[in-house]
Image: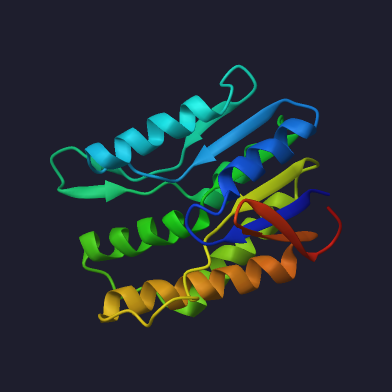
Length: 194
């Protein structure tokens, strides 16, 4: 049965670096599951910096990001739970990050003209991630952002994103063996043992 670690915190709190360090402490093979789509030059630069921060000889990479579907003006969004189900050969799987995954799902719904993503949808998807991780024998490290600790967003889409992220974090934390809050580059134990 897979072990689940959830790492949360604010922007630039050290979540990704801590997740990588925890993953490297464990015996390989290791899989890094990226959820950040390269939407513009600034995001492509961030992705490049993240790749440089991890020793790619120690990590295989899977990009679970939206892909354009030619001639259809739509996107194809990989099913993250299926990616995790197929990760059985890895001892360590690091998903960075759940917040971008939620943004991808919101964007996918918008592009398809589908109904808005709901907290119930996100809770169900998160339970699917937990089930997929538990179905394997490795350690699954999920990185997420605490988006609700600042001001109330000024528009409905941003408020929905904040609420969906909060629901995701709650469901994942309940199902995790260990929860770590990163602040100022330091890990704080919330649940389980460091």
